[in-house]
Image (cartoon, rainbow, N blue to C red):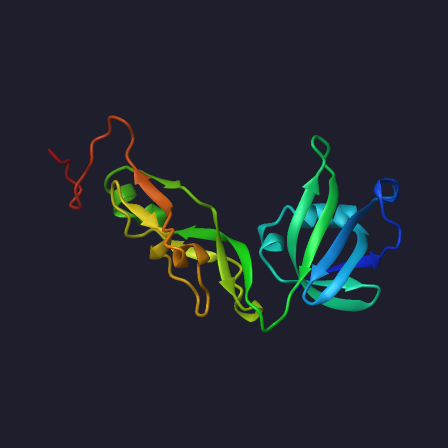
Length: 202
Protein backbone atom coordinates (compact mmCIF):
# COMPACT_ATOMS: atom_id res chain seq x y z
CA UNK A 1 0.00 0.00 0.00
CA UNK A 2 1.36 3.47 -0.91
CA UNK A 3 2.11 5.89 1.89
CA UNK A 4 -0.76 8.40 1.98
CA UNK A 5 -0.44 12.11 2.66
CA UNK A 6 -3.03 14.89 2.59
CA UNK A 7 -2.64 18.37 1.12
CA UNK A 8 -4.64 21.45 0.21
CA UNK A 9 -4.37 23.36 -3.03
CA UNK A 10 -3.22 26.95 -2.56
CA UNK A 11 -3.73 30.06 -4.63
CA UNK A 12 -1.50 32.53 -2.80
CA UNK A 13 2.17 32.58 -3.78
CA UNK A 14 5.31 34.44 -2.87
CA UNK A 15 7.56 34.82 0.13
CA UNK A 16 4.99 36.59 2.30
CA UNK A 17 2.26 34.01 1.64
CA UNK A 18 4.64 31.14 2.34
CA UNK A 19 5.80 32.76 5.58
CA UNK A 20 2.20 33.05 6.79
CA UNK A 21 1.62 29.38 5.98
CA UNK A 22 4.64 28.34 8.03
CA UNK A 23 3.44 30.44 11.00
CA UNK A 24 0.18 28.45 10.82
CA UNK A 25 2.08 25.14 10.88
CA UNK A 26 1.63 24.51 7.18
CA UNK A 27 4.31 23.57 4.66
CA UNK A 28 4.27 25.05 1.12
CA UNK A 29 5.00 22.68 -1.73
CA UNK A 30 4.33 21.86 -5.36
CA UNK A 31 3.34 18.88 -7.50
CA UNK A 32 4.65 18.88 -11.07
CA UNK A 33 5.30 16.65 -14.09
CA UNK A 34 3.42 13.64 -15.39
CA UNK A 35 1.91 15.63 -18.23
CA UNK A 36 -0.02 17.92 -15.87
CA UNK A 37 0.38 21.53 -14.81
CA UNK A 38 2.26 22.51 -11.68
CA UNK A 39 -0.04 22.46 -8.62
CA UNK A 40 0.92 24.59 -5.60
CA UNK A 41 -0.08 22.87 -2.35
CA UNK A 42 0.31 23.16 1.40
CA UNK A 43 0.63 20.32 3.90
CA UNK A 44 0.77 19.75 7.65
CA UNK A 45 4.37 20.53 8.62
CA UNK A 46 4.55 18.28 11.69
CA UNK A 47 3.25 15.23 9.82
CA UNK A 48 5.67 15.70 6.92
CA UNK A 49 8.63 16.49 9.18
CA UNK A 50 8.41 13.09 10.87
CA UNK A 51 7.66 11.23 7.64
CA UNK A 52 10.84 12.69 6.15
CA UNK A 53 12.87 10.99 8.88
CA UNK A 54 12.07 7.54 7.43
CA UNK A 55 14.04 6.07 4.52
CA UNK A 56 10.94 4.49 3.02
CA UNK A 57 9.29 7.90 2.53
CA UNK A 58 12.18 9.00 0.31
CA UNK A 59 12.20 5.83 -1.79
CA UNK A 60 8.50 4.99 -2.21
CA UNK A 61 5.61 5.89 -4.43
CA UNK A 62 3.38 8.20 -2.39
CA UNK A 63 -0.36 8.72 -2.69
CA UNK A 64 -1.15 12.39 -2.18
CA UNK A 65 -4.74 13.54 -1.64
CA UNK A 66 -5.25 17.14 -2.75
CA UNK A 67 -8.75 18.43 -1.98
CA UNK A 68 -10.17 14.92 -2.38
CA UNK A 69 -8.28 14.04 -5.59
CA UNK A 70 -5.57 11.38 -5.27
CA UNK A 71 -2.38 11.27 -7.33
CA UNK A 72 0.69 9.07 -7.20
CA UNK A 73 3.93 10.99 -6.75
CA UNK A 74 7.58 10.73 -5.81
CA UNK A 75 9.40 13.01 -3.37
CA UNK A 76 11.86 15.03 -5.44
CA UNK A 77 13.22 17.90 -3.36
CA UNK A 78 13.17 19.14 0.23
CA UNK A 79 14.39 22.57 1.33
CA UNK A 80 15.35 22.71 5.01
CA UNK A 81 15.94 25.74 7.24
CA UNK A 82 19.71 26.22 7.74
CA UNK A 83 19.55 25.83 11.54
CA UNK A 84 15.94 25.31 12.65
CA UNK A 85 14.18 21.93 12.62
CA UNK A 86 11.88 23.20 9.90
CA UNK A 87 11.06 22.20 6.34
CA UNK A 88 10.71 25.31 4.17
CA UNK A 89 9.46 23.80 0.91
CA UNK A 90 8.81 20.39 -0.62
CA UNK A 91 8.51 19.17 -4.24
CA UNK A 92 6.67 16.11 -5.56
CA UNK A 93 6.72 14.70 -9.09
CA UNK A 94 3.72 12.92 -10.60
CA UNK A 95 4.36 9.47 -12.03
CA UNK A 96 2.90 7.57 -14.95
CA UNK A 97 2.58 3.80 -14.77
CA UNK A 98 3.95 3.37 -18.30
CA UNK A 99 7.10 5.45 -17.77
CA UNK A 100 10.27 4.40 -15.95
CA UNK A 101 11.24 6.36 -12.88
CA UNK A 102 14.69 7.07 -11.44
CA UNK A 103 14.80 6.75 -7.66
CA UNK A 104 17.47 6.40 -4.99
CA UNK A 105 16.67 3.47 -2.71
CA UNK A 106 18.48 2.38 0.47
CA UNK A 107 20.89 -0.56 0.53
CA UNK A 108 20.07 -3.25 3.11
CA UNK A 109 23.23 -5.09 4.17
CA UNK A 110 23.00 -8.67 5.47
CA UNK A 111 25.32 -11.48 6.63
CA UNK A 112 28.29 -9.29 7.56
CA UNK A 113 28.83 -11.35 10.72
CA UNK A 114 29.41 -14.59 8.77
CA UNK A 115 31.69 -13.13 6.09
CA UNK A 116 35.02 -15.06 6.18
CA UNK A 117 36.97 -11.81 6.34
CA UNK A 118 35.07 -10.84 9.50
CA UNK A 119 34.55 -14.20 11.21
CA UNK A 120 37.97 -15.72 10.52
CA UNK A 121 40.24 -12.76 9.86
CA UNK A 122 38.90 -10.16 12.27
CA UNK A 123 38.25 -7.63 9.52
CA UNK A 124 35.59 -4.93 9.41
CA UNK A 125 33.01 -4.12 6.75
CA UNK A 126 33.10 -0.55 5.48
CA UNK A 127 30.02 0.68 3.61
CA UNK A 128 31.08 2.98 0.80
CA UNK A 129 27.46 3.58 -0.26
CA UNK A 130 24.20 3.40 1.69
CA UNK A 131 21.81 4.06 -1.21
CA UNK A 132 21.80 3.60 -4.96
CA UNK A 133 19.90 5.06 -7.90
CA UNK A 134 17.76 2.58 -9.80
CA UNK A 135 15.45 2.75 -12.81
CA UNK A 136 12.22 0.79 -13.22
CA UNK A 137 8.50 1.07 -13.85
CA UNK A 138 6.51 2.24 -10.81
CA UNK A 139 5.01 -1.22 -10.27
CA UNK A 140 8.50 -2.73 -9.93
CA UNK A 141 9.91 -0.24 -7.42
CA UNK A 142 11.54 -2.07 -4.46
CA UNK A 143 11.73 -0.54 -0.97
CA UNK A 144 15.44 -1.39 -0.82
CA UNK A 145 18.20 -3.44 -2.45
CA UNK A 146 19.59 -6.31 -0.37
CA UNK A 147 23.38 -6.61 -0.29
CA UNK A 148 24.68 -10.03 0.76
CA UNK A 149 28.11 -9.75 2.40
CA UNK A 150 28.50 -13.44 3.29
CA UNK A 151 31.30 -14.14 0.81
CA UNK A 152 33.53 -11.15 1.50
CA UNK A 153 37.13 -11.96 2.41
CA UNK A 154 39.98 -9.79 3.68
CA UNK A 155 40.67 -6.96 1.25
CA UNK A 156 37.74 -7.76 -1.04
CA UNK A 157 35.56 -5.09 -2.62
CA UNK A 158 31.89 -5.47 -3.52
CA UNK A 159 30.95 -3.40 -6.58
CA UNK A 160 27.66 -2.18 -7.98
CA UNK A 161 27.80 -4.90 -10.65
CA UNK A 162 27.81 -7.55 -7.88
CA UNK A 163 24.37 -6.54 -6.59
CA UNK A 164 21.47 -8.89 -7.22
CA UNK A 165 18.61 -6.75 -8.48
CA UNK A 166 14.90 -7.54 -8.48
CA UNK A 167 13.35 -8.35 -11.84
CA UNK A 168 12.94 -5.40 -14.24
CA UNK A 169 15.17 -3.13 -12.13
CA UNK A 170 18.28 -1.49 -13.60
CA UNK A 171 21.13 0.62 -12.27
CA UNK A 172 21.65 3.56 -14.68
CA UNK A 173 25.29 4.03 -13.59
CA UNK A 174 26.16 0.53 -14.83
CA UNK A 175 24.64 1.31 -18.22
CA UNK A 176 27.07 4.24 -18.39
CA UNK A 177 29.99 1.98 -17.47
CA UNK A 178 30.29 3.43 -13.95
CA UNK A 179 30.89 0.47 -11.62
CA UNK A 180 31.41 1.98 -8.17
CA UNK A 181 32.37 0.14 -4.94
CA UNK A 182 29.58 -0.53 -2.47
CA UNK A 183 31.39 -2.22 0.42
CA UNK A 184 34.96 -3.11 1.31
CA UNK A 185 36.40 -5.44 3.93
CA UNK A 186 39.32 -3.83 5.71
CA UNK A 187 41.73 -5.23 8.26
CA UNK A 188 42.62 -3.49 11.53
CA UNK A 189 45.98 -1.75 11.32
CA UNK A 190 48.70 -4.07 12.58
CA UNK A 191 46.25 -7.00 12.78
CA UNK A 192 47.18 -10.48 11.65
CA UNK A 193 45.13 -12.18 8.96
CA UNK A 194 43.82 -15.67 9.52
CA UNK A 195 43.35 -18.15 6.71
CA UNK A 196 40.07 -20.00 6.08
CA UNK A 197 40.98 -22.77 8.55
CA UNK A 198 41.26 -20.15 11.30
CA UNK A 199 45.04 -20.46 11.60
CA UNK A 200 47.22 -17.38 11.44
CA UNK A 201 49.00 -16.75 8.17
CA UNK A 202 52.76 -16.56 8.22
